Length: 99
Image (cartoon, rainbow, N blue to C red; front, side, top):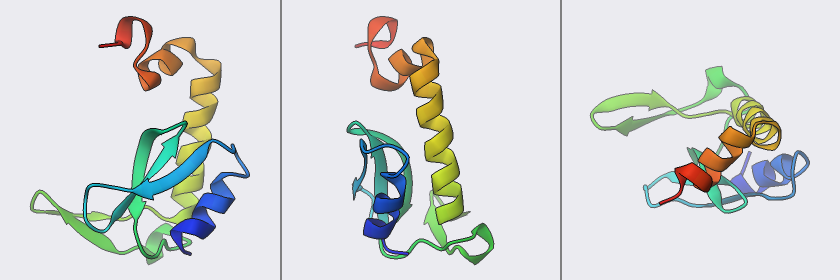
């Protein structure tokens, strides 16, 4: 699946989810209202975890997230942001979590 296709799927969960280029080569950022939640591969996202590729990060090989995992993570994170004020404030860096 392409990043645009994944973004379209994620926007069915919440229209404020976007995918933008990351500052790390080969990765894109999944964002909620402009704040990064997690990274996905830039060119192709596998449907299932067992079909995902790997990326080297700090001399370690880490498996890319799949479409299935990205949807689950986005759903859980946005639900927590919407229902837990402390988590909401920490995510957006406001209140006691602000700079």
